[in-house]
Image (cartoon, rainbow, N blue to C red; front, side, top):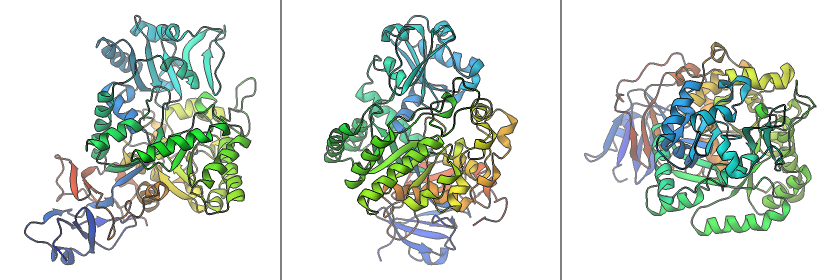
Length: 561
């Protein structure tokens, strides 16, 4: 065998299961040997690059199964409210952006619990930006906060009807407050100046740099298409692939317009064929079946509590149409990437997959449901039965102030028991994948793994302000480190259809790796370690200059496997 280009020795190897191996060798971008330090060192030549892990954890590169990378990059370059969690902080960032003199002030990342009553109004934004339209998307991307100038530009008055799958929030007197939910946001955002291609490429490169620094080497973009203030990312992916600046491994789901019915299927097939012809291998379709619980737009089996008249949220697509769409896509070999938050939406998605299986048999694509804030206990076993992947956003599964004050009171104590049932899904045999939904929440996989395994907030998270965020939120739903690591690596690669190349440390796999600053011995260690080095195809694309690969932090306790 020819000498390797790179060897890594002295590692705690997660392959993604914890392995007895401690070293690996890489040649031409792929792993060519895995074994003991002695065996791998014997393969090296004088020209071989050597990395001594010093006992630190070495994992497959993280694979984010549900992300909006271009939107995250645009936030990094613009008015990014994600870095603050206070009115003063929001005001400072918005005023600073307005001072740049652009014709519109556009940003994202605000949290509802910062505002009295849980939602902002246009009066405050009018004070900060009185002279031009201002549009700020919520961190969950389901609400758009606008000022009076933006409402005027869009022609929205107190009499403007709500659009399908959206709502113009109004006060008790029927006056539009400046909050637009779901598709209502597009009434304003369609008038915003288009982003230039150069800005979009710069944003995607910024996102890639950020994700590399967190150990993410591959991801699945959950929306290829226009949504609220998020521009279609597909042209930018194609352009950056063509100019060589997109290095990460990327797949994506084509966006299904929320107001479209089965008649849209031919156009969807045409869009997918065009993307594939351009070199982007799209094999899945994103369907948003409901909204979010905080806005009472998530679809629930039983009504929300304390909302009059009784409200159960909206099914974006009628269930019969959803079943027809899913079965047709399934027959064409395409998978569906559902957005399902409420228990009724989750059931409708499972029912649609069941209809596809009944029509097409079990040879169709593996489908997935993302988010899963609520799953009725009767539906937990159906994931494994139908072969549906549970696509988890683990950083949400904790006792944040917004969840305790805005969300759980709307659900009640009984339904709160089914809040993010990760452990229940795993015990029932569900296939798990993980992602961040960035910029909805931080893209940091170590933060997500910490919360998945402890159901508490990471210590450094600026949004975890309340003491309750340090108390486990339904400890019975915790995952073990091994299960969680698999979900954030191989599980995500499997649902993206790239597990033959990614998500594992084994001979023949691409050498996409993340070396941490120390070993993983138990759930608490995810909040102690950080990314020391990210390797893509055998080449280091990120190195933390503040860490020393040879001097890792100790593990806190024996590994839970």
